[in-house]
Amino acid sequence: MRYSLLDRSRTRAGRPEQAALRDSLERAVAAERLGYHRFWAAEHHTVPGIASGAPAVLLAAAGQHTSRIRLGTGGIMLPNHRPLVVAEQMLMLDSLTPGRVDLGLGRSLGFTAPVREALGRSEASPEQFAQEVAEVRHYLEGTAALTARPVAESPPPIFLLATGSGLDTAARLGLPVVLGGPVLGAAELPERLASYRRAFRPHRGSAPNVILSADVLVADTDAEARELALPEVWAMARSRETGEFPPLDSVATIRARALSGRERSRIERGLATTWAGSERTVAARIEEVMERTAADELLVSGSTFDREALAASDRRVAALLG
Image (cartoon, rainbow, N blue to C red; front, side, top):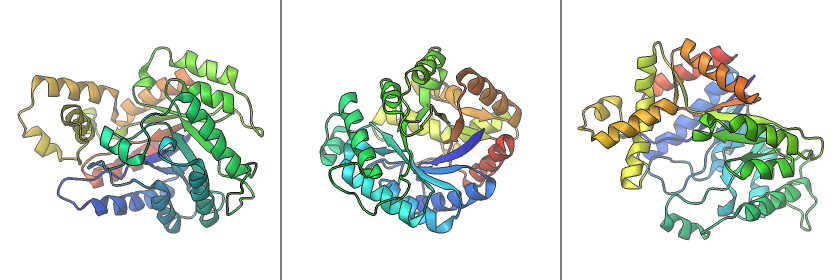
């Protein structure tokens, strides 16, 4: 099974935001050395906890520090951009790193109403999204009325970050899908994936392909791994309260707080959805989900405050899956 890495360029309390981008480049280099198949970068705008608002720029830098690992977007949020501009960025990136580029596309808008207003888009229906995905593909493949440049001999593949109707869109367009978050625990997921595979319409020889994205963290014990997962889970819990997704705090800082009952409940729910544990625990979790879904690839997306512990977890995951 292929295993890949999604990095969100998470900022950390007490460190300059720019350091998060340097951390991402170091992680890309390490991921290539460890045998990860892909290194993907995320897109978020004006979020204090995430430094990457332009994944194509980050991936261009990552491409200069690596030589083999595939580089992709997890994802570019298409409603925030014009299809032609997205295609041009990917074609340029592919020219700089030939044959290594993946284009992951998502439908999410900005995190808050002011951000959505600044980006110039207030809604994106499934129908609009499907139409714009098709436009991007026409530009990449050279079948649009205008020619996007530089022209590629073999256009970068497109992946859809799919929730809800996204699976139907991917099947109709003959595209691979990336699934993550709460949907991974849904009882109906196997049937939804079976429906995607049945309805799949091949495009230029494509076949159904399912990538699962999960926050995976490995440590010596389950308790230690849960502590590694705490900073990310705490940031999500705080965002529910404040509407702002914050930088990662240290475990000691979080544990020193007087948490409300609601905050403790949210933390426990968040930890329950994280694949955090010893090698044995995580291996069992991965085996169960992969068997239930027949997925083709795991996209690891875990993060934590302690950068050395995160690097160690990445090494353990690679050893576990490789």
